[in-house]
Structures are given as structure tokens and as C-alpha cells.
Image (tube, rainbow, N blue to C red; front, top):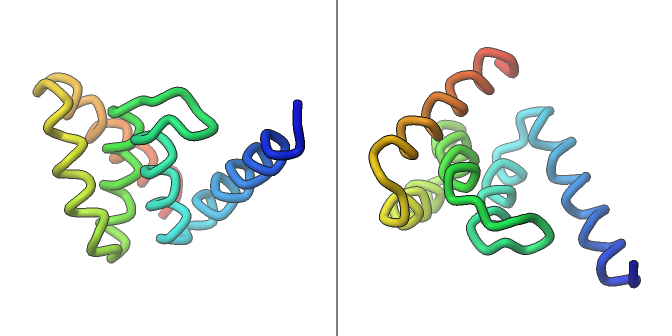
Length: 93
């Protein structure tokens, strides 16, 4: 693992920890990571979930990005992303 990979891994771990603490920007950043596949496997369901959580916490641009990601998903996948977001909220409010 090169330095760039280690830095990205540390960044992702930092974002996850801050998301667990409810930091809106970290929620948004995780959406970006999952939507682009940077440092994680691209996963539009996860991206939608994180953008949704960021939007709920007041990150306005997350609404736009959530809408863009939703274009890549079918209705069942959007429902799954919403279910995961609701579950996350029950654990972190």
C-alpha cells in the first residue's frame, strides 16, 4: 500500500468517525466517496444513503447530489437506500 492509499484510507476512516458523531460534512463526503468510487467500491445505494443523511442535516448540495445518484438507481434500490438511512438515524440521533 503506497502513501496515497494510506492517506485515502485514513481520510475514509476519519469521515466515518465524524459521520458517526453526526457531522453533516462528513456524511456528505461519504456520499461523494461512494458515488465516485474513490477509496471504496462505487455503490450508488450507499451514496444515496449518505447524501440523504447529509441533506437531512442541512447540507443543501447533498439534495442535488442525491437526486443525481437516484438517476442511476431503480425504485427498489432507492427504497433500500432510504431504509438504510432511516436505520442509521435510529442509531445516531
